Image (cartoon, rainbow, N blue to C red; front, side, top):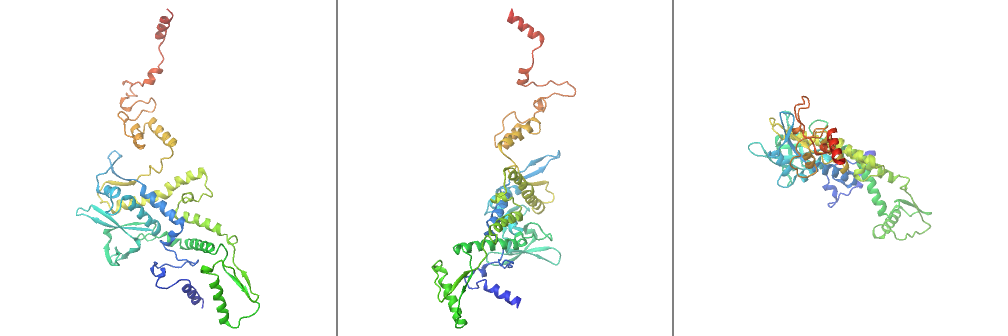
Length: 432
């Protein structure tokens, strides 16, 4: 009877009427807390929504850079390639690059997979990348060992698409084919958080009083039907529009309240722990989702650096590797990079110290520092300075042979002491 008892409780807990949301929700497994958890209803938790939003917006804000390697080991930026136009200007006819990347990163964070239909021309150049919702696409293995995709459009029509026409971004995978959904893996933890959130809502809907109780009746009811009528009349008198009205009991009846208090259930502690647990799931520092209980100035700065190094860098590497492997031709001597310079800028004092060190040590030009600060370059500031004497490298002589003539800076000429004869002549002229 255990299974049938569970089945009866499961049916009783959900409405099955025509207007109930049960028929429109995706098929999910009920957790031990009694909650159904899916990628969509997990967003009801503010911590989940905040974490996904941070990952998606940060990834969308990173500048896309396309490089071509040079023979001397350097690299030149490429802006006239179709991939740059696709990623940095217009990925498809409906979205700009920020919206497109934000949505795909949200799919990755919630479902572990992101998909795009590839629209290419006769030369193999990709014209558009049209995103497809992960819930409307599934992978299918074929006897040859390859795989293809079955895509369902908005009208419910299913079509078979070969793998070469789908760009598939995967999260952490156990089989190399499909990414694992973080929401599915953390279903029990998120179910408990949803249950606690719903309990808190019901608690305040009940005038912040624990629900449940029993009525002491010194006598006895005539039969079970009379007991049922009393119970239903009592519940009708204390629910809906009658909530909070004065309760009147007859025949010596006494109401006894039953329920664990929020203090006994450690409700607030549980809610705080769930925020930390969700931040751990998405590898987001708690202070970034407004959990400042243990935040200090020093550890927030360190956690922000760790967010860039250990959270966003792996995501960017995943995007870069997939773009180079799936979208570029094998013979293309190009490299893809998402630029983290803006995330690592620091405050004005830190940037000033960084530029000063680079310029004085010769590995940064003054115009490069101006460009990094969104200032226009100036004439004469394109050459690096020699560290010791702070002269321009092109004007420096051969330090080894001594044959060259060094260019004096005005400050050096002013500071050069006069020789003895000049001092003497000056003294004589002054005294004589």
